[in-house]
Structure formats: structure tokens, C-alpha cells
Length: 451
Image (cartoon, rainbow, N blue to C red):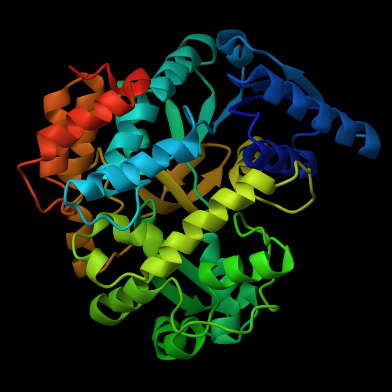
């Protein structure tokens, strides 16, 4: 019997989505699912929802709540982590806006730039504690992480626990699944693509037509203006949801119906996206809000209204979402687990693993996002040919990730200061130590370990 530990399972979005994916799997029939969350009431609520679904559909899975982390992990075959600390949006507001008061023009505050650093400094220590418990209670388990900032978390974890099977997962690459078929006017099964980079900082590296083997990337570029230039963004989604009271779930691998949105700003959410496509010849797999976090000049050309509306919609959607288990595939962990259990190999579009030569010019220890071959032997990354200009942008993050990991592992305030001073988003120097001290004071329960 397969045993899965879901850490952070009380989350409405993560918990219901992951359980729905598990319940669809033939390979996981009869699996034991252990829910753990620092919010015991939330975990109990999720267990009630899961048991009701199991009873209604006559499933054989078993669901338990275990508040003790060690016991929750004991003997687990697979562990899925999706946690945050504190009041997520209140802390996010600080990560984004306080650095701006110190003169740093960051476009967002989650994964890259100063916001990504402070987010990392908060969340990596508890994830390291979870990983230490995995090594003690389930050393052979494969661990999948959904928490952000993905690449900084995973880079630090692999440095601290080099023998841990730790894989970062993100659904941003699903945008290619949604957009390429209508853009190219082809069925999904006739399109083969690959992408690579860092999490939330990745581009499509190649695209071909399956039936002919012909290159499709040129067609993508030729049709981008007519397609992406007219696609609705989060400003349109937010405006429509406020007008109609109808929310659209936009996260995950399921189809998203935006046909009710007719008034669209040109290149909504994609002004920086357009610059990258035109200047670097590569198609980003995500919006300005994510991609722009890593680029010093992004503030000059990003769709700031779209970024603000994305943040507002995301916060409002999470605040109003009803917990519901559905039959839509939300994430990619379960297909990976299925392939590992059954040996039925396939190519997964994106995993976050140590580089090991998959992307040129980047060190092996840096966790990159690349496609992978998955089978009974596990997850093996696939090398991708990232354009030289994009590799140069990625290389700007090497020192940032290295110093972030060392700041956490050495509990060093000074290394946190240095991590900001090497970040391409930071273009000032005088106030940086004061900024770090300000954030430590504001977020003391999570950052006062820095000395």
C-alpha cells in the first residue's frame, strides 16, 4: 500500500486539488493519505471533505490527520509540501512594498528580487525542518515541493540534504498547453514543445509539429501579435468578476474558459513578455508579474496594472474559494507518482532539480526548471538549448541564489545584505542594511534568527 504525506494539507487550494488528483489515480487506489498542517482545524476540515468524497464515490483510500510531523511522515513513500508561514498576504505586502520605500523598483514581491529574498528567508527554515524529519522517518521517500520561492528553496534544500529526493513542482508551464493549440491552430497531440530556465523565469526552447517534424517556433513568433496581443489578462478577469460575481479558477492544468471576456487591453499582462519575445527571440511561459521579478529593467516595461490586478484577484479568489474536490487534474505530481509506481515512462514538461548540465552556463548546484523523463527509476532531467541571451539573464541569478542559501544555512544577516547587493533588481546601496534590519524587525518571528 502506498503512503502519502501531505504537508500543509489544510490549504483549500492545495488540499482539495491534490486530493482530487490522487482520487483519480488507478495506481493510488487504496493509498493511505496522511494530512498534516500547523492549523489542526484546517486539516480536520480537509479530512472531512476527503472522507465525504470517498464515501460518495465508493473509493478505497484511507485518510488520516496526524498533527505530529514525524508520525505523519513515518514510512511515507511520497511527501508533498505546500506551506506558508504567518499571514500570507500581509507578509507579501511587506515583501513587495517596503523595498519600494527604500528605492528599489521591483515589479512584484514573491520569488525574485528583494521580495523573493525575504520570502525565502522566512519559509526555507521550516522547510528544512520538514526535510530533516523526512530524512529521519522516511529517507527513501520522494518529496515534491510546491512552496515558493521554488528555485531558492530547492537550491538550499539540496545543499543541506544532498541525498534527499527533492523535486520542485510548478504549473506555470501549463500555459503552453493552453495557448499553443489555438495559436498554431493544431490539436494538442500534434505539438511537441520543451521549456527551460528557472522557476517563473523560463522560456520555451523548442516547438515542433509531430506529424511532419517541422519547426513550429517560427510560426509561434509570427502569430504571437495576433494571438497574445488579444488575450485577456488578469485586469479583464478581475473587472469581469467584480461586475458579474463570477470567479474563474486560473491555476492548474485544467482548461480555463475566458470566452466571456470581450474587452481586452493590448498584450494584457504581457508587455515585458512581448519585449523578451522580440529582443531575445524566446517565448516566456509566464506573465510579467513573475518573469519581471528577476530583471533589473523590467520595471520600465512591465504591465503594472496587470500585475496589481493579478495580485488583487489572486487574494480575492483565495479568500472566497469554496473547498471542493473535483475530477479536473490540477497538478502534475500524481502523473509522476503513477509513472514511478507503474514504470510507464513519459516526458514531464517541467520539474525543478539541480542543473547537472541541463542548461549551459549555469552551475550544477543551481536548481533549474527543465523537462524530465519519468519512469520506475525516478525523475531524470533532460537538457534543453536555452538561447544565449536568456542564459545571460539566468546567470545573473547565480550569486543571488548562492547567497540566499548561505544566508539561511549560516543564519547570517550580512549575507542577506550581500544577496540584495548582487541582485540585478537592486540599483541602490546606501539603504540596503537598513532595509534588512527593517524587515527583520517587522517579521521578527521568522527572520530574527539572522545575526
